[in-house]
Image (cartoon, rainbow, N blue to C red):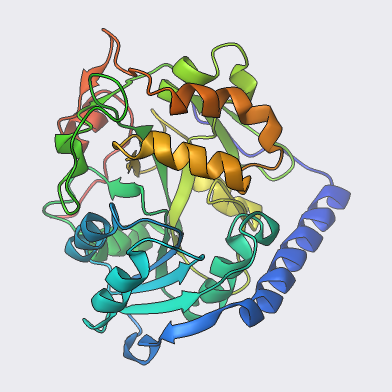
Length: 348
């Protein structure tokens, strides 16, 4: 895939983007009033601590492995917002906070009205993230990259800083099992790749969007299974989850897009030149159909939920996502070999 440069924009467009960023920051500042602290360990955050910011609801199945994965990768402190969980998530988080590396807030407000959690996470990034490398992810997203076993996050961020790079991009890669969704067995804390052992190696398509210059990367499993008749509505798969944060930065569409716009240029998709990784997407664990029914009833995950009725209908039916062209997941080095991410040139 060729390098996709930022599109040129007019002075007026640049001015509108500055206003958009300021509105996002103002919304985040106001949103602090909606967050109720449950456990506050933020005094333990050191200047070099790598932070992980996450908004979640009902993630008891994924939380143990999520925390273990990112602790092992080098996250020093988790900033977590629980949006009204009614499963065991709150208890698991409070127990995890006893380790001293997790701070927890509760919020009962509308996820959709908060720009799908961006107002809440934006405040935590503004308040605690300034000057830190910050990882903003969902609980069903596990960051991997070539060389991670020998070079965990502190080494990765040091290498990025040496390159003068302030953001690290990733392709969100859907993992799936062979057989109907929901027919497998998964135990909390288990490596999800033991159950979701397959992925689509392509095709993927990408372009830059004006005026912000954010990548728009689509394709893969959900495009193939759920949006074959309307590929323009397929999920956006590019993310910029790891950023050396500044309190003047703002995410504008999940972690797909950032302002100031120059940050978006630091990920150019599969086959690009910038070092990149992947977010292993564990959405299709055995609880996927039940979660889809709950999300459909709540109507909190899309701007226009009615447009995605067909997506929910297919997912709740327990489809078999496997097909003959699917590839077995063998780790990030293999993903780099087939062109889905670009390895860092590690210093000796």
